[in-house]
Length: 526
Image (cartoon, rainbow, N blue to C red; front, side, top):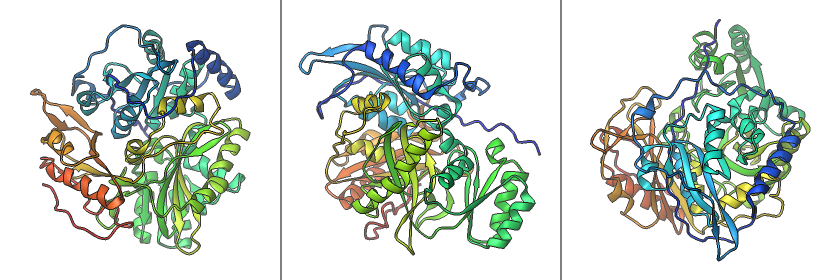
Protein backbone atom coordinates (compact mmCIF):
# COMPACT_ATOMS: atom_id res chain seq x y z
CA UNK A 1 0.00 0.00 0.00
CA UNK A 2 1.24 3.43 -0.90
CA UNK A 3 0.48 6.17 1.60
CA UNK A 4 0.05 9.59 0.07
CA UNK A 5 1.67 12.57 1.72
CA UNK A 6 -0.72 14.19 4.12
CA UNK A 7 -0.67 17.96 3.97
CA UNK A 8 -2.38 20.18 6.49
CA UNK A 9 -3.36 23.47 4.90
CA UNK A 10 -3.32 26.50 7.14
CA UNK A 11 -4.96 29.89 6.74
CA UNK A 12 -3.93 33.07 8.59
CA UNK A 13 -4.04 36.98 9.18
CA UNK A 14 -2.63 40.20 10.79
CA UNK A 15 -3.45 43.60 12.39
CA UNK A 16 -2.34 46.86 14.05
CA UNK A 17 -1.99 46.62 17.80
CA UNK A 18 -3.64 48.83 20.44
CA UNK A 19 -2.70 48.37 24.05
CA UNK A 20 -4.51 48.27 27.38
CA UNK A 21 -2.48 47.89 30.55
CA UNK A 22 -3.54 44.72 32.33
CA UNK A 23 -0.65 43.61 34.53
CA UNK A 24 2.90 44.41 35.50
CA UNK A 25 5.34 43.42 32.78
CA UNK A 26 8.45 41.35 33.22
CA UNK A 27 11.04 40.14 30.75
CA UNK A 28 13.41 41.36 28.06
CA UNK A 29 14.41 45.00 28.29
CA UNK A 30 16.89 45.05 25.42
CA UNK A 31 16.68 43.64 21.90
CA UNK A 32 20.15 42.10 22.18
CA UNK A 33 18.91 39.91 25.01
CA UNK A 34 16.66 38.14 22.52
CA UNK A 35 19.61 37.12 20.34
CA UNK A 36 21.81 36.09 23.26
CA UNK A 37 19.05 33.92 24.67
CA UNK A 38 18.23 32.35 21.33
CA UNK A 39 21.82 31.20 20.87
CA UNK A 40 21.86 29.70 24.36
CA UNK A 41 18.47 28.06 23.81
CA UNK A 42 19.62 26.57 20.52
CA UNK A 43 22.67 25.09 22.23
CA UNK A 44 20.46 23.67 24.98
CA UNK A 45 18.22 21.96 22.45
CA UNK A 46 21.32 20.71 20.61
CA UNK A 47 19.58 21.26 17.27
CA UNK A 48 21.53 20.07 14.27
CA UNK A 49 22.48 22.69 11.72
CA UNK A 50 21.19 20.38 9.05
CA UNK A 51 17.91 19.87 10.96
CA UNK A 52 14.63 18.86 9.39
CA UNK A 53 13.60 19.97 5.93
CA UNK A 54 10.98 22.62 6.26
CA UNK A 55 8.16 21.25 4.20
CA UNK A 56 8.91 23.14 0.99
CA UNK A 57 6.92 20.57 -0.97
CA UNK A 58 3.70 21.71 0.70
CA UNK A 59 1.69 23.51 -2.00
CA UNK A 60 0.83 27.16 -1.69
CA UNK A 61 -2.58 27.77 -0.20
CA UNK A 62 -5.27 28.85 -2.61
CA UNK A 63 -7.02 30.84 0.10
CA UNK A 64 -4.49 33.62 -0.37
CA UNK A 65 -6.32 34.68 -3.48
CA UNK A 66 -9.68 34.58 -1.72
CA UNK A 67 -9.23 37.65 0.45
CA UNK A 68 -7.24 40.84 0.56
CA UNK A 69 -5.98 42.24 3.81
CA UNK A 70 -7.76 45.38 4.85
CA UNK A 71 -4.76 46.57 6.85
CA UNK A 72 -1.48 47.43 5.18
CA UNK A 73 1.78 47.44 7.09
CA UNK A 74 4.43 50.11 7.00
CA UNK A 75 8.17 49.62 6.67
CA UNK A 76 8.91 51.76 9.73
CA UNK A 77 10.63 50.31 12.76
CA UNK A 78 8.22 48.36 14.98
CA UNK A 79 10.27 48.74 18.15
CA UNK A 80 9.06 51.28 20.71
CA UNK A 81 9.64 52.23 24.31
CA UNK A 82 6.98 52.58 26.98
CA UNK A 83 8.39 55.57 28.84
CA UNK A 84 5.95 55.23 31.74
CA UNK A 85 6.95 51.65 32.56
CA UNK A 86 10.52 51.89 31.21
CA UNK A 87 10.57 48.71 29.14
CA UNK A 88 10.90 47.99 25.46
CA UNK A 89 7.79 47.04 23.56
CA UNK A 90 7.89 44.13 21.15
CA UNK A 91 6.62 43.42 17.65
CA UNK A 92 4.95 40.00 17.60
CA UNK A 93 4.37 37.75 14.59
CA UNK A 94 1.58 35.17 14.91
CA UNK A 95 1.79 32.26 12.49
CA UNK A 96 -1.62 30.94 11.46
CA UNK A 97 -5.03 32.04 10.26
CA UNK A 98 -7.82 30.30 12.17
CA UNK A 99 -9.95 31.05 15.20
CA UNK A 100 -7.11 30.15 17.57
CA UNK A 101 -4.80 32.64 15.88
CA UNK A 102 -7.47 35.36 15.95
CA UNK A 103 -7.83 34.82 19.71
CA UNK A 104 -4.05 34.95 20.19
CA UNK A 105 -3.84 38.19 18.22
CA UNK A 106 -6.63 39.63 20.37
CA UNK A 107 -4.81 38.74 23.61
CA UNK A 108 -1.35 39.79 22.43
CA UNK A 109 -2.69 43.14 21.22
CA UNK A 110 -3.89 43.88 24.75
CA UNK A 111 -0.43 43.24 26.24
CA UNK A 112 1.21 46.43 27.54
CA UNK A 113 4.58 45.28 26.15
CA UNK A 114 3.19 44.71 22.65
CA UNK A 115 4.14 47.29 20.04
CA UNK A 116 2.43 45.68 17.05
CA UNK A 117 0.82 42.33 16.23
CA UNK A 118 1.39 40.86 12.78
CA UNK A 119 -0.35 37.69 11.57
CA UNK A 120 0.66 35.56 8.60
CA UNK A 121 -1.27 34.92 6.53
CA UNK A 122 -4.36 35.72 8.61
CA UNK A 123 -7.98 35.84 7.52
CA UNK A 124 -10.64 38.38 6.66
CA UNK A 125 -12.00 38.57 10.20
CA UNK A 126 -8.62 39.24 11.78
CA UNK A 127 -8.04 41.96 9.22
CA UNK A 128 -11.38 43.70 9.68
CA UNK A 129 -11.25 43.54 13.48
CA UNK A 130 -7.89 45.36 13.57
CA UNK A 131 -6.59 42.85 16.11
CA UNK A 132 -3.49 42.47 13.92
CA UNK A 133 -2.02 43.55 10.60
CA UNK A 134 -2.34 40.72 8.13
CA UNK A 135 0.56 39.61 5.95
CA UNK A 136 -1.22 37.44 3.41
CA UNK A 137 1.74 36.94 1.06
CA UNK A 138 4.20 35.44 3.57
CA UNK A 139 4.75 31.73 2.96
CA UNK A 140 4.80 30.25 6.46
CA UNK A 141 6.17 26.97 5.07
CA UNK A 142 9.27 28.73 3.77
CA UNK A 143 11.54 29.10 6.78
CA UNK A 144 13.98 31.43 5.01
CA UNK A 145 11.14 33.73 3.97
CA UNK A 146 9.81 33.91 7.53
CA UNK A 147 13.29 34.63 8.91
CA UNK A 148 13.85 37.37 6.33
CA UNK A 149 10.51 38.96 7.18
CA UNK A 150 11.23 38.87 10.92
CA UNK A 151 14.60 40.55 10.45
CA UNK A 152 13.14 43.18 8.14
CA UNK A 153 10.36 44.06 10.56
CA UNK A 154 12.40 43.66 13.78
CA UNK A 155 10.10 40.96 15.14
CA UNK A 156 10.91 40.25 18.81
CA UNK A 157 8.65 37.24 19.29
CA UNK A 158 7.10 34.66 16.97
CA UNK A 159 4.07 32.69 18.20
CA UNK A 160 3.32 29.62 16.08
CA UNK A 161 -0.37 28.73 16.21
CA UNK A 162 -1.03 25.60 14.10
CA UNK A 163 0.58 22.20 14.55
CA UNK A 164 1.65 21.65 10.93
CA UNK A 165 4.43 24.32 10.84
CA UNK A 166 5.65 23.11 14.24
CA UNK A 167 5.92 19.50 13.12
CA UNK A 168 7.56 20.69 9.88
CA UNK A 169 10.29 22.45 11.90
CA UNK A 170 9.54 26.18 11.73
CA UNK A 171 10.65 26.72 15.32
CA UNK A 172 13.96 24.94 14.62
CA UNK A 173 14.70 27.35 11.77
CA UNK A 174 13.69 30.49 13.66
CA UNK A 175 15.57 29.63 16.87
CA UNK A 176 18.67 28.76 14.83
CA UNK A 177 18.40 32.24 13.28
CA UNK A 178 18.26 33.84 16.75
CA UNK A 179 14.55 34.76 16.67
CA UNK A 180 12.66 34.08 19.94
CA UNK A 181 9.88 31.63 19.08
CA UNK A 182 7.11 30.26 21.25
CA UNK A 183 6.37 26.74 20.06
CA UNK A 184 8.16 23.40 20.27
CA UNK A 185 10.83 22.07 17.94
CA UNK A 186 10.01 19.45 15.31
CA UNK A 187 11.45 16.79 17.61
CA UNK A 188 9.31 17.86 20.60
CA UNK A 189 6.26 18.28 18.34
CA UNK A 190 6.27 14.50 17.87
CA UNK A 191 4.08 14.46 20.98
CA UNK A 192 1.27 15.46 18.64
CA UNK A 193 2.75 14.44 15.31
CA UNK A 194 2.88 10.77 16.31
CA UNK A 195 0.43 9.22 18.74
CA UNK A 196 2.68 6.16 18.81
CA UNK A 197 5.58 8.34 20.07
CA UNK A 198 3.33 9.82 22.75
CA UNK A 199 2.18 6.38 23.89
CA UNK A 200 5.75 5.09 24.13
CA UNK A 201 6.69 8.13 26.24
CA UNK A 202 3.76 7.38 28.55
CA UNK A 203 4.93 3.79 28.92
CA UNK A 204 8.50 4.80 29.71
CA UNK A 205 7.67 7.51 32.25
CA UNK A 206 4.60 5.91 33.90
CA UNK A 207 2.10 8.49 32.64
CA UNK A 208 -1.47 7.17 33.00
CA UNK A 209 -3.13 6.52 29.63
CA UNK A 210 -5.44 4.01 27.97
CA UNK A 211 -3.91 0.65 27.07
CA UNK A 212 -3.17 0.29 23.37
CA UNK A 213 -1.43 -1.48 20.52
CA UNK A 214 -0.01 -0.07 17.29
CA UNK A 215 -0.54 -1.64 13.85
CA UNK A 216 0.43 -1.21 10.22
CA UNK A 217 -1.21 -4.47 9.09
CA UNK A 218 -5.02 -4.20 8.81
CA UNK A 219 -5.57 -7.93 9.40
CA UNK A 220 -3.57 -7.87 12.64
CA UNK A 221 -5.43 -4.77 13.79
CA UNK A 222 -8.79 -6.39 13.14
CA UNK A 223 -7.75 -9.54 14.98
CA UNK A 224 -6.80 -7.48 18.04
CA UNK A 225 -10.09 -5.58 17.83
CA UNK A 226 -11.95 -8.88 17.70
CA UNK A 227 -10.17 -10.01 20.84
CA UNK A 228 -10.81 -6.76 22.74
CA UNK A 229 -14.40 -6.20 21.64
CA UNK A 230 -16.36 -2.96 21.28
CA UNK A 231 -16.57 -0.13 22.12
CA UNK A 232 -12.99 0.59 21.10
CA UNK A 233 -11.03 3.57 19.75
CA UNK A 234 -9.13 3.69 16.43
CA UNK A 235 -6.63 6.53 15.85
CA UNK A 236 -4.50 7.56 12.90
CA UNK A 237 -0.92 7.92 14.11
CA UNK A 238 -0.16 11.24 12.42
CA UNK A 239 -1.77 14.65 12.01
CA UNK A 240 -5.31 14.41 10.67
CA UNK A 241 -6.74 17.89 11.37
CA UNK A 242 -8.69 16.63 14.39
CA UNK A 243 -10.57 14.01 12.37
CA UNK A 244 -8.33 10.94 12.69
CA UNK A 245 -10.10 9.38 15.66
CA UNK A 246 -13.03 6.93 15.51
CA UNK A 247 -14.84 5.93 18.68
CA UNK A 248 -16.28 2.66 17.38
CA UNK A 249 -19.31 1.40 19.25
CA UNK A 250 -19.43 -1.81 17.19
CA UNK A 251 -16.86 -4.18 15.71
CA UNK A 252 -18.11 -3.27 12.24
CA UNK A 253 -17.40 0.43 12.84
CA UNK A 254 -13.93 -0.43 14.13
CA UNK A 255 -13.11 -2.56 11.08
CA UNK A 256 -14.35 0.21 8.76
CA UNK A 257 -12.08 2.71 10.54
CA UNK A 258 -9.08 0.40 10.09
CA UNK A 259 -9.86 -0.03 6.38
CA UNK A 260 -10.30 3.72 5.96
CA UNK A 261 -6.82 4.39 7.35
CA UNK A 262 -4.72 1.37 6.38
CA UNK A 263 -6.41 0.15 3.18
CA UNK A 264 -8.10 3.12 1.50
CA UNK A 265 -5.53 5.67 2.68
CA UNK A 266 -8.20 8.26 3.52
CA UNK A 267 -5.79 10.07 5.86
CA UNK A 268 -2.71 9.81 3.66
CA UNK A 269 0.57 9.21 5.43
CA UNK A 270 -1.06 10.18 8.75
CA UNK A 271 -3.00 6.92 8.63
CA UNK A 272 -0.19 4.57 7.57
CA UNK A 273 -0.05 3.41 11.18
CA UNK A 274 -2.99 3.12 13.57
CA UNK A 275 -3.33 2.98 17.32
CA UNK A 276 -6.08 0.72 18.66
CA UNK A 277 -6.93 1.92 22.14
CA UNK A 278 -9.21 0.87 24.95
CA UNK A 279 -12.44 2.83 25.31
CA UNK A 280 -12.46 4.93 28.47
CA UNK A 281 -15.81 5.85 29.97
CA UNK A 282 -16.04 9.21 31.68
CA UNK A 283 -15.96 12.94 31.00
CA UNK A 284 -13.41 14.58 28.72
CA UNK A 285 -11.57 17.76 29.70
CA UNK A 286 -8.82 19.92 28.24
CA UNK A 287 -5.78 20.84 30.32
CA UNK A 288 -3.26 23.43 29.13
CA UNK A 289 0.17 24.26 30.51
CA UNK A 290 2.86 26.70 29.41
CA UNK A 291 6.25 24.98 29.35
CA UNK A 292 9.78 26.43 29.22
CA UNK A 293 11.73 23.19 28.78
CA UNK A 294 11.99 22.35 32.48
CA UNK A 295 9.09 24.11 34.23
CA UNK A 296 5.36 24.19 33.57
CA UNK A 297 2.55 26.46 34.77
CA UNK A 298 -1.11 25.56 34.29
CA UNK A 299 -3.59 27.71 32.45
CA UNK A 300 -7.22 27.95 33.51
CA UNK A 301 -9.33 24.87 32.92
CA UNK A 302 -11.51 24.45 29.84
CA UNK A 303 -13.78 21.84 28.30
CA UNK A 304 -14.71 21.42 24.66
CA UNK A 305 -17.32 19.50 22.68
CA UNK A 306 -15.80 17.31 19.96
CA UNK A 307 -18.90 15.61 18.55
CA UNK A 308 -20.81 17.46 15.84
CA UNK A 309 -24.30 16.89 17.25
CA UNK A 310 -26.27 17.86 20.33
CA UNK A 311 -25.85 15.50 23.25
CA UNK A 312 -22.34 14.66 22.06
CA UNK A 313 -23.58 12.61 19.11
CA UNK A 314 -22.26 12.12 15.59
CA UNK A 315 -18.70 12.14 14.26
CA UNK A 316 -15.76 13.91 15.88
CA UNK A 317 -14.83 17.41 14.74
CA UNK A 318 -12.10 19.90 15.53
CA UNK A 319 -14.42 21.24 18.25
CA UNK A 320 -17.94 22.71 18.22
CA UNK A 321 -17.70 24.82 21.35
CA UNK A 322 -15.97 25.21 24.70
CA UNK A 323 -16.24 26.85 28.09
CA UNK A 324 -13.95 27.95 30.91
CA UNK A 325 -13.58 27.18 33.73
CA UNK A 326 -14.57 23.50 33.61
CA UNK A 327 -16.22 22.35 36.86
CA UNK A 328 -15.03 18.78 36.27
CA UNK A 329 -11.41 19.92 36.76
CA UNK A 330 -11.37 20.71 40.44
CA UNK A 331 -8.29 22.22 42.06
CA UNK A 332 -7.45 18.79 43.44
CA UNK A 333 -7.70 17.18 40.00
CA UNK A 334 -5.62 19.94 38.43
CA UNK A 335 -2.88 19.24 40.96
CA UNK A 336 -3.04 15.52 40.16
CA UNK A 337 -2.81 16.24 36.41
CA UNK A 338 0.25 18.43 36.91
CA UNK A 339 2.00 15.87 39.14
CA UNK A 340 1.14 12.67 37.28
CA UNK A 341 0.89 13.79 33.64
CA UNK A 342 2.32 17.23 32.78
CA UNK A 343 5.50 17.30 34.89
CA UNK A 344 6.54 13.71 34.03
CA UNK A 345 6.05 14.57 30.34
CA UNK A 346 8.18 17.72 30.58
CA UNK A 347 10.92 15.90 32.50
CA UNK A 348 10.70 12.92 30.15
CA UNK A 349 11.06 15.04 27.03
CA UNK A 350 14.06 16.78 28.57
CA UNK A 351 15.63 13.42 29.44
CA UNK A 352 15.04 12.25 25.86
CA UNK A 353 16.99 15.26 24.56
CA UNK A 354 13.94 17.08 23.12
CA UNK A 355 13.08 19.83 25.58
CA UNK A 356 9.55 21.08 25.12
CA UNK A 357 8.98 24.84 24.93
CA UNK A 358 5.44 25.95 24.16
CA UNK A 359 1.87 25.01 25.06
CA UNK A 360 1.28 21.46 26.17
CA UNK A 361 -2.38 20.62 25.63
CA UNK A 362 -3.47 17.41 27.31
CA UNK A 363 -6.74 15.85 26.24
CA UNK A 364 -7.93 14.04 29.36
CA UNK A 365 -10.56 11.53 30.33
CA UNK A 366 -11.77 11.75 33.90
CA UNK A 367 -12.67 8.10 34.36
CA UNK A 368 -16.15 7.37 35.63
CA UNK A 369 -15.12 4.35 37.68
CA UNK A 370 -12.11 5.92 39.43
CA UNK A 371 -12.59 9.67 39.10
CA UNK A 372 -8.93 9.90 38.11
CA UNK A 373 -7.50 11.53 34.97
CA UNK A 374 -5.94 9.58 32.11
CA UNK A 375 -4.16 11.07 29.11
CA UNK A 376 -6.02 10.60 25.82
CA UNK A 377 -3.73 12.63 23.58
CA UNK A 378 -1.31 15.53 23.47
CA UNK A 379 -1.43 18.57 21.26
CA UNK A 380 1.55 20.89 21.06
CA UNK A 381 -0.35 24.16 20.62
CA UNK A 382 -3.37 25.96 21.98
CA UNK A 383 -6.60 24.08 21.40
CA UNK A 384 -9.24 25.47 19.09
CA UNK A 385 -11.85 26.48 20.30
CA UNK A 386 -10.52 26.36 23.90
CA UNK A 387 -8.01 29.09 23.08
CA UNK A 388 -10.85 31.51 22.46
CA UNK A 389 -12.34 31.21 25.94
CA UNK A 390 -8.92 31.26 27.59
CA UNK A 391 -7.72 34.36 25.76
CA UNK A 392 -10.79 36.45 26.60
CA UNK A 393 -10.28 35.58 30.29
CA UNK A 394 -6.49 36.14 30.44
CA UNK A 395 -5.46 39.39 32.16
CA UNK A 396 -1.69 38.90 32.33
CA UNK A 397 0.74 40.41 29.81
CA UNK A 398 0.82 37.52 27.34
CA UNK A 399 3.86 38.83 25.46
CA UNK A 400 6.03 38.82 28.58
CA UNK A 401 4.73 35.42 29.72
CA UNK A 402 5.60 33.82 26.39
CA UNK A 403 9.03 35.47 26.32
CA UNK A 404 9.67 34.11 29.82
CA UNK A 405 8.83 30.64 28.51
CA UNK A 406 11.25 31.10 25.61
CA UNK A 407 14.12 31.89 27.96
CA UNK A 408 13.32 29.16 30.51
CA UNK A 409 12.08 31.46 33.26
CA UNK A 410 8.51 30.36 34.00
CA UNK A 411 9.35 29.16 37.49
CA UNK A 412 7.56 31.37 40.00
CA UNK A 413 5.30 33.06 37.47
CA UNK A 414 1.55 33.03 38.04
CA UNK A 415 -1.17 34.11 35.64
CA UNK A 416 -4.09 36.45 36.28
CA UNK A 417 -7.56 35.56 35.02
CA UNK A 418 -10.79 37.49 34.95
CA UNK A 419 -13.44 36.20 37.35
CA UNK A 420 -16.57 34.56 35.98
CA UNK A 421 -16.79 32.34 32.92
CA UNK A 422 -16.51 32.35 29.15
CA UNK A 423 -18.13 30.26 26.43
CA UNK A 424 -17.61 29.91 22.69
CA UNK A 425 -20.19 28.48 20.29
CA UNK A 426 -18.74 27.42 16.94
CA UNK A 427 -20.76 28.12 13.81
CA UNK A 428 -19.82 25.69 11.04
CA UNK A 429 -20.71 25.23 7.38
CA UNK A 430 -23.64 22.91 6.66
CA UNK A 431 -22.27 19.42 6.01
CA UNK A 432 -19.21 19.74 8.27
CA UNK A 433 -17.26 17.60 9.19
CA UNK A 434 -18.06 16.07 5.81
CA UNK A 435 -18.15 17.95 2.52
CA UNK A 436 -19.56 21.46 2.68
CA UNK A 437 -20.27 24.38 0.39
CA UNK A 438 -17.86 27.31 0.32
CA UNK A 439 -18.61 30.92 -0.46
CA UNK A 440 -21.90 31.28 1.44
CA UNK A 441 -22.68 34.83 2.57
CA UNK A 442 -22.46 35.80 6.27
CA UNK A 443 -24.11 39.01 7.46
CA UNK A 444 -24.93 40.97 10.62
CA UNK A 445 -21.69 40.19 12.47
CA UNK A 446 -21.22 43.73 13.81
CA UNK A 447 -24.72 43.74 15.26
CA UNK A 448 -24.16 40.31 16.78
CA UNK A 449 -21.04 41.47 18.59
CA UNK A 450 -22.99 44.35 20.16
CA UNK A 451 -25.98 42.31 21.31
CA UNK A 452 -24.62 41.92 24.87
CA UNK A 453 -21.59 42.95 26.95
CA UNK A 454 -18.52 40.74 26.73
CA UNK A 455 -19.21 39.31 23.24
CA UNK A 456 -16.33 38.77 20.83
CA UNK A 457 -16.53 37.01 17.45
CA UNK A 458 -13.40 35.17 16.35
CA UNK A 459 -13.07 34.21 12.69
CA UNK A 460 -11.77 30.77 11.72
CA UNK A 461 -12.71 30.37 8.06
CA UNK A 462 -13.85 33.61 6.43
CA UNK A 463 -12.86 35.70 3.42
CA UNK A 464 -14.12 38.78 1.61
CA UNK A 465 -16.14 38.49 -1.58
CA UNK A 466 -15.78 40.96 -4.48
CA UNK A 467 -18.08 43.39 -2.66
CA UNK A 468 -16.17 43.24 0.62
CA UNK A 469 -18.74 41.06 2.40
CA UNK A 470 -17.85 38.10 4.62
CA UNK A 471 -18.17 34.66 3.08
CA UNK A 472 -17.47 31.22 4.56
CA UNK A 473 -14.39 29.38 3.30
CA UNK A 474 -13.93 26.64 5.88
CA UNK A 475 -15.71 23.95 7.88
CA UNK A 476 -15.58 25.71 11.23
CA UNK A 477 -16.13 29.37 10.38
CA UNK A 478 -16.96 31.52 13.42
CA UNK A 479 -16.36 31.30 17.18
CA UNK A 480 -19.08 33.31 18.92
CA UNK A 481 -17.48 33.98 22.31
CA UNK A 482 -18.92 35.65 25.40
CA UNK A 483 -17.92 36.34 29.00
CA UNK A 484 -20.30 36.41 31.94
CA UNK A 485 -20.39 36.55 35.70
CA UNK A 486 -21.08 32.83 35.60
CA UNK A 487 -21.33 30.11 32.97
CA UNK A 488 -25.09 30.52 32.52
CA UNK A 489 -24.74 34.22 31.74
CA UNK A 490 -21.84 33.53 29.34
CA UNK A 491 -23.95 30.89 27.59
CA UNK A 492 -26.98 33.15 27.25
CA UNK A 493 -24.88 35.98 25.82
CA UNK A 494 -23.12 33.72 23.35
CA UNK A 495 -26.37 32.29 22.02
CA UNK A 496 -27.95 35.76 21.83
CA UNK A 497 -25.10 36.72 19.52
CA UNK A 498 -25.45 33.51 17.49
CA UNK A 499 -29.12 34.31 16.89
CA UNK A 500 -28.17 37.71 15.44
CA UNK A 501 -25.83 36.22 12.81
CA UNK A 502 -27.49 35.96 9.41
CA UNK A 503 -25.98 32.91 7.73
CA UNK A 504 -28.25 30.39 6.02
CA UNK A 505 -25.26 28.18 5.13
CA UNK A 506 -24.24 27.46 8.72
CA UNK A 507 -25.27 25.50 11.80
CA UNK A 508 -24.28 25.22 15.46
CA UNK A 509 -24.78 22.97 18.46
CA UNK A 510 -27.54 24.18 20.75
CA UNK A 511 -26.23 22.61 23.96
CA UNK A 512 -22.68 23.86 24.56
CA UNK A 513 -22.00 23.59 28.28
CA UNK A 514 -24.71 20.99 28.85
CA UNK A 515 -22.61 18.93 31.24
CA UNK A 516 -22.14 21.89 33.55
CA UNK A 517 -25.49 23.66 33.15
CA UNK A 518 -29.24 22.96 33.12
CA UNK A 519 -30.57 22.14 29.66
CA UNK A 520 -31.79 25.06 27.58
CA UNK A 521 -32.76 24.80 23.92
CA UNK A 522 -31.84 27.31 21.25
CA UNK A 523 -33.29 27.51 17.76
CA UNK A 524 -31.31 26.01 14.90
CA UNK A 525 -30.08 28.46 12.23
CA UNK A 526 -30.64 27.90 8.55
